[in-house]
Structure formats: C-alpha cells, structure tokens
Image 1: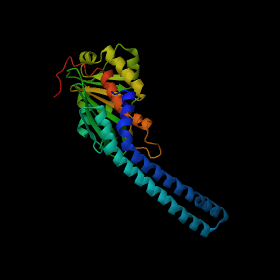
Image 2: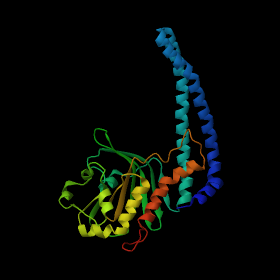
Image 3: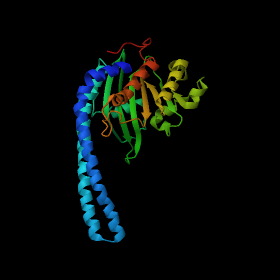
Image 4: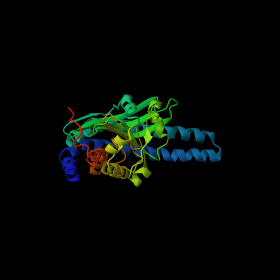
Length: 309
C-alpha cells in the first residue's frame, strides 16, 4: 500500500486539479442550499405562530411559502448529490484505483453475485435479495482480492447484513470447510446448510483469547488447525481490533471470505465537507484495510498453492 506521503504527492500532482471544479460546484450549491433554508426558517416559525393564534390564513400562507423555499433547497441538495456522486466515482475513484494498483477493476454500480455469498457460507441460506455497489477487484502480488459494499435481505425485506464483503485467494490447499464466526454475531449457524451440520464440529484451539472472541467450526479438525496456525490466529485477532467490527471469516475451496458489518458508504462524496486531502485519505482507508489484510494474513506467501493466472 502507498504511504501517506506518496498519497499526498499524488493528491497535489493529479487529484487536486480534478477535484477543484467539483469543489467549486459543491461550495456554490451548498451556499444556495443554506440560503433557501435560512429564507424558509421565518415562515416555518410563522406557521407555529399561526397555530398559537389560531389563524388559519397565516398558517396556510406561511406553510406554502416555507414549502417553496424548502423545495428549492431540497432540489439543490438532490442535484448536488447526484452530480458529485457521478463525477467522483467515474473520475476520482478511477484515478485513485489506478494510483494504488497496477491490475484492478472498479465497477461503481456492480456488486458481488449472490452465488459467491452463498459459497462463502457466511450468510443465511434464506436470504431473498441482495444489493450493493462499488465492486472492486485487484491483485496484490499473487493474491487476487475482490470486495464490495453489500446489503442482504430476508423475504420480508428485513435487513440481514450491511457492510463490506471480501473474497481472496488463500495460500493453503484444503478440502474442508472452516468457519471463524464472531461470538457476538447472532444466528451464526443459519449460514451453514443442514447437510453439513452433522459433519461440522466445534474446534477448540489452543489460543484462549481467540476462542473467547470467535466460534471456530470445521468439517475437519486436523485441517482446521493446519489452516489456523498460531500466527494466523493472532493476525485475525489483530485485524478484528484494527477494524473494530465483529468480523467473521470462512475458508472454503481454497478461498478466504470475510464480512465486516456496518462498514459502508466509504466511496461517496461528501456534500458538506471539502474535497481536500483529508477526505481523500478517508476514502482510501477501506482499500488500505484490505491491502493490510493481505499483508497481515500473509496471503502472498504462496508455499502451498500455485500462482493464479
């Protein structure tokens, strides 16, 4: 991952000239939004005065004028959000991805398919709908990573998961299915098909702190220990601490899958914050999080598996 000084140099040399017209547009629109909101405020106050005095004409007239000014503010807000989102994602984000990675793919309106989520076995088998955006696929060394912001729903439209979902090639060949589930995550077994439940057993590992934080399940006790070395367990603990979230992982068919709940909307432009270096640094944070994952879990130490084409 690039250093902060390299990112600053890139911001000054490349991004700043792209962001300047967006910032000018943002500032002008915010000024209009605030002006219309300020103009609408006295008429909203007049509505309450009319209610107190019992004056229907005052209430109606004040409310109509309030709605006019407020609708102008809302129009500018929607227009600003739409314009900034389009230009930020299709101009700025591509520049950032090109700066960070030599081999990448970024599709703002795409998500990882439901079949991949199902294969990870980290989501309930009865999820009905999925939604998401900001699909990214990139290579670090010999490891390919893909992730996106993800939302999953039950059939009653109840939200099941909101956050980031990651899939990465792992550096060990294995035939078992091993799950590392945050103990605070509810209904963790709902993601495992019934025909595996007889095979999957609780794995009690030697790391007491790891056992306290995570429920480890596997179809093969020996292979689970082969995958979850003391070093890897410590790295997973460190990664959970770094994210501050109830992460869960699975190791299925030589791939690592990871969910980070309630961690989304990181690639959206901010209407009421300037497009400065601090904003760009915050935008890059999730990307740094996942590149750190590769380094932290040593996914590039390919001793056990072949290099991906």
